[in-house]
Amino acid sequence: MISKFIKVKKILFIIGLNLMFGIYNRICSQEFRFDLFFEDSAGHRDTIILGYDIQATKGIDTLFGEINIIDQPRNNEFDVRISDEWENRLYDTIPGTFHTKNQIVKKMDCDHKFTITSIDILTKEWPVTMRWDSTLFSNFCYDGSLFTSFYPGGWWDTGGDLVLFKEKSILVFTPWEYPSFRNKYGYINTEGDTIRVFWQTFGAKDLLFNNVNDVISDRILKIFPNPATDNLYLEFPNNFNPQSTYILNCIGKTCKIIPDNTRLINTSNLEIGIYFIVAKNKDGTILTGKFLK
Image (tube, rainbow, N blue to C red; front, side):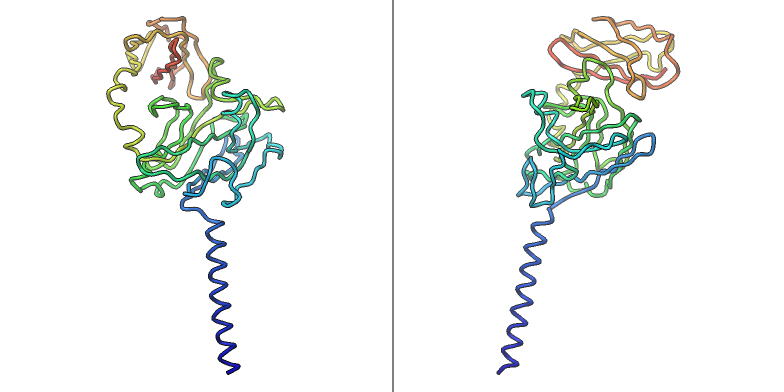
C-alpha cells in the first residue's frame, strides 16, 4: 500500500514538473525569432534578436526576456539597439522610453502588416555589414520580411537600402549623410552622438508589394546615360518638382547638391564608382536612383 502511494506521488511529481517546464518554456520562448549580426568596417560587432508572438506587444515584454537597457551607456565604438527613440523624438519631440537588444512584436495574420521595428546604430566606421539566416523566411506568410534604410510610411518601394530576408543573407549598408534627411533618419542623443536609424518588419511579400505596380511606374527616377561619362540627364515623373536633389557616393557621403529642377548634371569631376541620386519633392515624396561613372 505504501509502495503504491509512493508510486502515485512520483507520478504526480513528474506530471507537476512537466507542467511547470511547459509553462516555463511558454513564458521564455516565442513563436519565431532570429538573430541579426552586425559588424562595422573596423571589425566591431553587435547582435540583436527580433521575432514575433501572438502575446507580444510593441514595448518591453518580460514574458519574452526583453530587458529595458535605456539607462545603460552605449558602447561608443559600436552599438546596435532597438528603441522607440526615433518615433518619440520625431512625432512628439520627447525622448524614448525603452532600449533593448531583444524585441518580439505581436504576430499578425498574413493579410495584416506587422509592427515596424526601429533599429538604432552608433558607429564612426561605416559601412556596416549585417548577416542573418535567410532559410528561416521560407514561409509564404512571412517571405516579405525586410530591412530598410528608409522609413516607408506606407509603400515599401521607397528606395535606399532595402532587402528581403528571404532573398539574401548579407547586406552592406550606409547611412544617409545629406543634411535634409539627418533628422528624419536619425537623431542626436543626450551625449551628442549621432544615432542612425533603420527599420525592420515581418510580413508576406504579396502584402508588401501587391497593388503598387500602378504607382511604381509613376515614381521611377530615370537616369541616362548609365554609365555616365561627363554628363547625365534626369527624367522625373509628371507632377514631380524636386525641391532638393543630392548625389551620394557608395558610402553615403554627399558629392554634389543639385539646384531645384535641374535635369542636366555635369559628372566630369566625379571619380569612377557607384553613385546614388536622391530627389525630394516639395510634398515630401522621395525618388532614388543609382548610376555608374
